[in-house]
Length: 400
Image 1 (cartoon, rainbow, N blue to C red):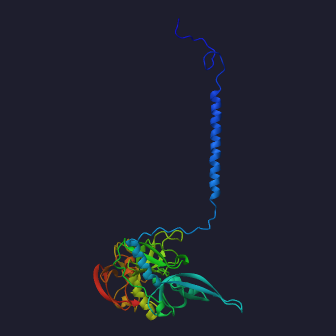
Image 2 (image 1 turned 120 degrees about the vertical axis):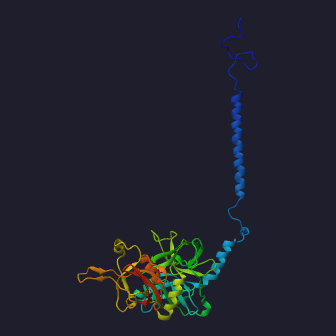
Image 3 (image 1 turned 60 degrees about the horizontal axis):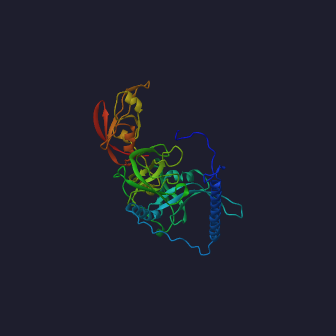
């Protein structure tokens, strides 16, 4: 007989004596377990609810939390804080205000039509800014200039002088000397790309805003409001926005190195390309504006030949004089322009300027850069080519 019988068998009870239905014990155990878990959850909820009732939303003993101690300023932060504290009193708002007459029994209303920044030049109340900041006051009737000092006192201003070719202007206020802190003047000729610089101004009317950046490039050339070229301009990535114009660009010890004047932008906002007129230009132009009310632009009294046509004619460097105006600087020094036939055809080329005061002149850009830095009345050495021979002559610079 086999050890295993495969025939189906009826289940027996727990004792194995009698056949019975399957045991119900596990089913009742599961119900009791589920019921216990439900009661436990209800108990936890009740305890939690009681605790929540004890957490009232208002507490009459509420008090401010103690502040954590501040971290000490690092060297760079101390530098910036010290610079701002030392320079802020020199920085001002410059606004053009439109005056609208009110009714016979009312005061006139004032509306700022444009504005920018500036800085205190001397303790006589002279303020330096950009020409384009104050230009509206020269064109629009019923306007006046207004300067707001760092202490938020407001002063009417009058124009002292303007140099649109350099986008510079001087205005003056009658504030007492104890309210005026002239800015410290530095140098820009020794700036290096990568050097830290700071801008302080009033972007979008937000007074005394300071931003920090680097000197991004040097010797840029930008256009003035009159379309002439401004040479040796400083490029910076310090955030400069509308309203910063006319404000100072400072080195790390708070010296003026430039006047913020414009930005390169596709949308009207700062994208990290700002330009500042170098302090050497400012320090040359501003005293003349204070003395004479205007700046005489240096000029040699010549009209230059078209540079593209000059290069096509295989002259690879220099600028050719097309016309030396009679009685002007170049003509007095014996320089000559192009000679034309009665039919208007070139018969003899003009003198080609290749150097001024030892600086090489390769193209019109070089010529304009060097010329802008000359002083009217100064005598300069001009090197030129005539019939393939190089010569030099002394020229007394005109002022126009």
